[in-house]
Length: 45
Image 1 (cartoon, rainbow, N blue to C red):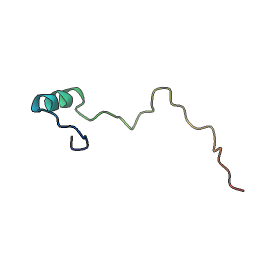
Image 2: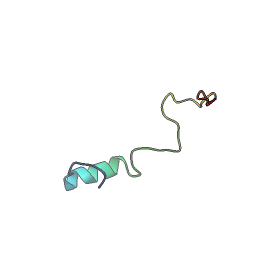
Image 3: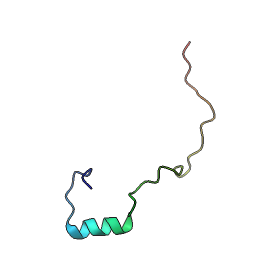
């Protein structure tokens, strides 16, 4: 919780940890509507 610029009360902190026990993001899953890249568009000649 130290990464936030706000101060949570003990009750708020408990509630957040109940709702998001492992954090907010699951980086192992793609985002909503996210598709794999179809190739690299940037070229250097």
